[in-house]
Length: 394
Image (spheres, rainbow, N blue to C red):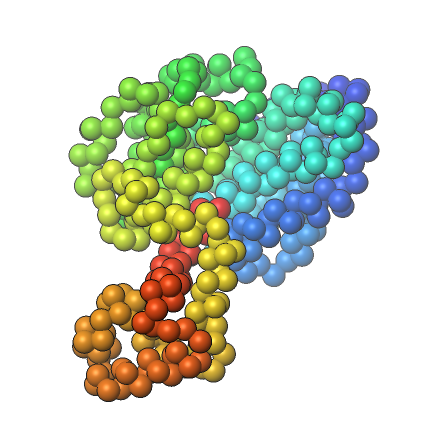
């Protein structure tokens, strides 16, 4: 298969090889699964396989390639293709599948650093370029196999330029030292490796994967470091990048941060993903700003606390099967707790609404005249509205 680099005597030098061989693969896998457990693209996908075995298979393959310099043979590639084809057949979107592998590579590296002794960690940090070079080759291989496994889908995944941009973006966000290979990637892309950079997230509303990929390609041509994540485009631009031409497209949704140092890029990118997802749901187009969605972003920054708010407000109603009361409470929040507007919207008689309000207050212990309790309800309804979109970007 043409995507494979030639095998060699081993990508890891003797000291790094000895460090890698000391790891208990099972422990590494368990550490990675803890991270996967917080990734909705992984947890929300129904797939009737032993997920732990699949993660272990991939970790074993990557370590074997790294330690021995032996890339996957035709048999292993066939197995990988079957794994990925099963995901496609089960209906997982291609962007989610690629996201799981990309996040998995970072989790693998972080697991190694967390589990290593101080002495072994020093070796890993010193040899980071060797490890990441292997992981990037493995991700390139996975994307190419995805292209075959999802060949029956209308939209195809990324090009070589897209993969270069994604690899360079990941390395810049990971604050890894810039290498000759990074400079080569940047030169091929026409991207200036001179920070600080402006992180951005963009998408074309209503466009499929191929439309987002075309947007990423046009942005790269204009000098941005851009790549597709399936439903959106992520990347970095120099400070003076001109967005005017792109903003002429009425479908474009753009979230853009000011120039940032590299140690802030990763967190900023996560926030921008959430911002464009929230803006897309609200129907906004053009340039969007965090100030326009502060309540939603505040909730997105603390998803566990946000879930607790939803349980606090709606849990007692759901426990009694009072769906009509839950719908009434949502409608009250949407209409600013105005009884007349809410009764008209439901529609119910005003006296029926007042009876329902009394039932809601009794079951939940909330007072819908109290501003603090009203705020709690508003936060719960807001998080219910955007949670699925926000979790899709993690």
